[in-house]
Image (cartoon, rainbow, N blue to C red; front, side, top):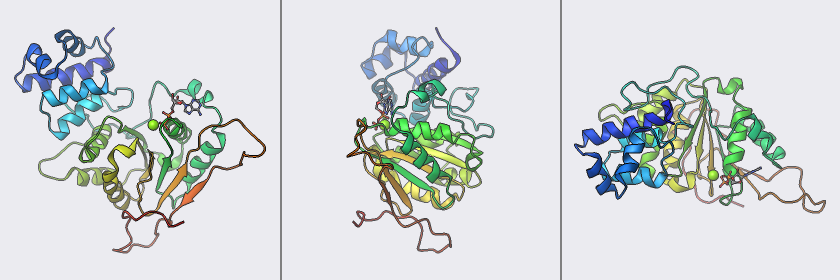
Amino acid sequence: MANASASRFGQVLRRLRLVAGLSQEELAERASLSVRGISDLERGLRTSPRPETVRLLAQALDLGAGERASLIAAAHPELDVSASAPDGTSVSRPPTPIVSLRRPSLDAASLTRLVGREAELAQVSTLLRREEIRHITLTGPGGVGKTQLALATAMQLAADERFSDGIAFVELASIQDPALVASAVAATLGVKERGARPLADSLAESLRQRRLLLVLDNFEHVLPAALLVADLVVACPLLVVLATSRERLRLRGEREVHVEPLALPSPCTRTTRPPLRTWPPWPRSSSSSNGPRRQGPASP
Ligand SMILES: Nc1ncnc2c1ncn2[C@@H]1O[C@H](COP(=O)(O)OP(=O)(O)O)[C@@H](O)[C@H]1O
Ligand SMILES: [Mg+2]
């Protein structure tokens, strides 16, 4: 059955299709999708378009970065917590808290099912409460549990004063082009593109006074966009970033928490704390040369 969130993707898709001057049949042919599928999406009868479907539609509609980000954001209503724009075209600026974490798979019940990560959860939460820490990356192989740990940590910190403006969760798995990361973050935060102004500048302006935790999930797809993270962390003194990635972002001030595979407890192998790798702490004094910049591999 259609619902408000589901129909939002439909509204955005329909508007973009009409702007492109295409019928449903023409779009279906261009995207190699069925007419019925597109019709169902536009009417909100299909609620969860697959990333591949969204990609095909964006390609067939020849979307620019901003429109593509809007379409992607509309495809993830469970992560998009801002109000729907009346025209369904872009995400409007949400009220304070700027973003709250809402994800159906992460309610109190699912948290209790998160097994064997108590030490990591406590460790990451404690680190994120420390003022000098501005950026943590959870690293580890695919499927090890980075996303679940990030979500659980974010939930745990949702009421924390340090993040009184909220928590934004940006899913980057479906984004292959690092240049689109800014658009994806902007779409989640409700920051709109303005003329020729670089989107990174608009993001920085929007976040400058915000006490926000920005969760960037699956960053390994878009590692060159680490420079955007560096710029935002420098420009926005209250912003804290929690990234998940198979590799760290190699930014100054980044703390890496390596997520180990869950194993049966053994007296021989069990450690009380997971390994923590640290890089130079965030500089407190302002200096033109000490902003976060990508560095070479960590020294041993
Ligand atoms: N601690 C945990 N307890 C229960 N299930 C978990 C836990 N960690 C991960 N999972 C499950 O394992 C799968 C992969 O976890 P995910 O967090 O997506 O891994 P990653 O982000 O490292 O690729 C998911 O289905 C997730 O629900
Ligand atoms: Mg993940």
